[in-house]
Image (tube, rainbow, N blue to C red; front, side):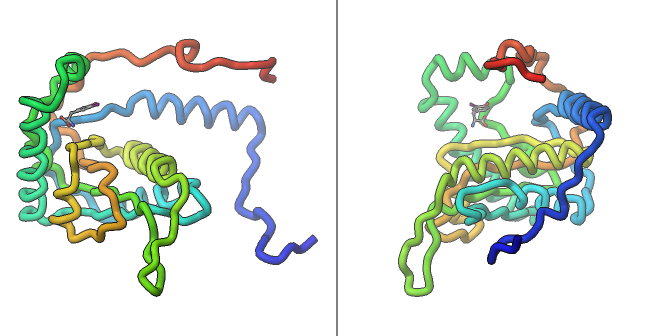
Length: 226
Ligand code: IYR
C-alpha cells in the first residue's frame, strides 16, 4: 500500500542470527578498545576520513528530523591557537577557582589540568554546535526538539565512527564555551555543545588505568530475553 510521504524501507538488511551474534560481538570488542586520549600526534589525517565519519554522525536519530547540529572542522593553526587560548583561560578559572573540591577529586584519576596543548597538536578540532532554535524566513524563532539528546547521539556516532576508522578522539568541554561562537563566527541560535579533538594518539600517549563497569552493573533486564 502506498502512503503519500512514505516509501518502502529498502536499505534494511537482515542478517542470519549467527551473523548478527558475530557482528554484535565484534563491534563490542572493537568499542572496548576505544579510549579517550589527551596526547595527540601532529600527523596529518586525510580529510575524506573525517567527512565519512561526519556523514555517519549526520545520520543520528533526532527530534522531528530537524538535525539540530552543526560541525565546524578546524585545521587552521591560527584558529587552533585562538581556541587553545580561549579554552585555557576558562580552564584556568575552572581548576583554580570555579571547580568545587569534590569535582576536582573526581577528576584526579584522569590527570587533567588547565593546560591543553592537544588543541594545537591534533590535526582536527571539531566544534559541535547545537541549534537551540531555527531562524525562519521572517526572522522568527522556530523551535527545535530534543536538541541535547539529538546532538548527543550524533556526537556518539561521530566518536564511534572515528574510533572505527582508527582515530583517537577527546571529548573536550571547556566551560563556558561561548568563545567558540566568537572565534568561529557562529550565530546566536547555535550553542557550543562540545569540542572534539581528533587525530592519531601520540606514540608515547598514556591513558588512565581506570576500569569500566561490568554489564550487570549497568544493565537490568525485565522479563525473559530470548
Ligand atoms: N573541562 C575540564 C574538566 C573536565 C571535566 C570532566 I566531567 C571531565 O571528564 C574531564 C575534564 C577539562 O577539560 O579539563
